Image 1 (cartoon, rainbow, N blue to C red):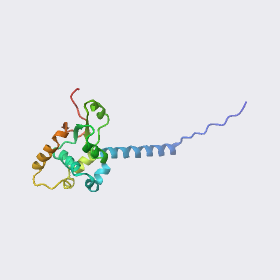
Image 2 (cartoon, rainbow, N blue to C red):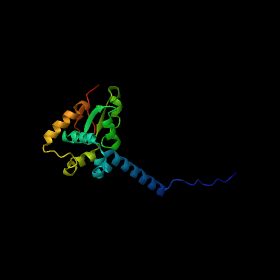
Image 3 (tube, rainbow, N blue to C red):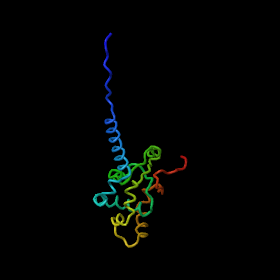
Image 4 (cartoon, helix red, strand yellow):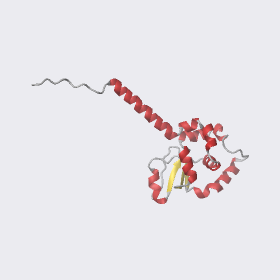
Length: 161
């Protein structure tokens, strides 16, 4: 009868700790990216990269105090803002509205909070009256927005289809 050697474990406490640390770092980076922390921290550098139309649309959302907007799919304005991280489609919501060619998008919460500070609002076009600017932007973007929703959690209760 042959003697068998005891099996050597390939997993130990130090490997588990390294795995847990890597997992936590990956998770934290994903949450930071989803919530827009990096973009909020570099807002002064990122804002000038927006086109005038994109900047005006973000200003419109802030002035209307709505961080969630439903718009038609394949709008170049929205696509540009999504590409730059100023808008994000909430997970799973886009597929629900594909048959209506509309999707909801939200401004990441950390970015939203940064834009709603006095320091963030100074990036907007200088106008004497916020009400006049709001009316101007509302007229400009009314045909591109299906609905605007106010909800800080990012989840919206929509009527049944």
